[in-house]
Image 1 (cartoon, rainbow, N blue to C red):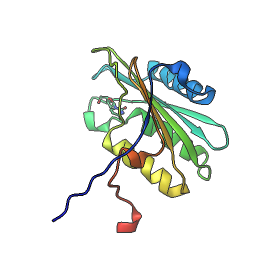
Image 2: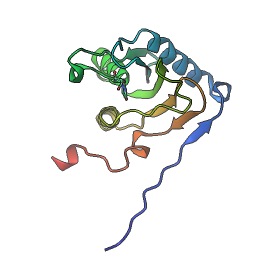
Image 3: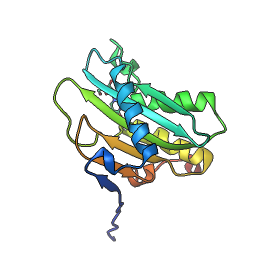
Length: 160
Ligand code: THU
């Protein structure tokens, strides 16, 4: 038996002013989108903004349901909206943030496993890396160059 190590590198910005203009714009669009989330059950409002290679931006937010599993995450709503409108255009970046009424989240909010898988599918679909920008209510921002960095062992069509 042998041991393998899986490592990834990401950038951490302590303040939004360290970001480039496009990333800053995308994160602010995500923050705006979070305000309109429908999250009466969790009070955890997730906002996302997706930048396409053609410059279009699509936003999404979580949409909860009294039948809890019928809920859809904010980033998946943004990604699906982008893909529905521009199926041939690769996604360049996805920003994800939160407005939490429960407690202030002062660290970057990570996408759930299902959302990582959906981002990965979109990387495979267009054969590009998708940058991910993460922030909580406040605090540091993570800049990730590909979802593969946070989904290191990834399932795709090659296994089918
Ligand atoms: N949520 C997202 O929108 N994205 C994630 O990646 C994690 C969780 C939502 C789903 C639910 O409405 C609320 O956050 C609490 O889980």
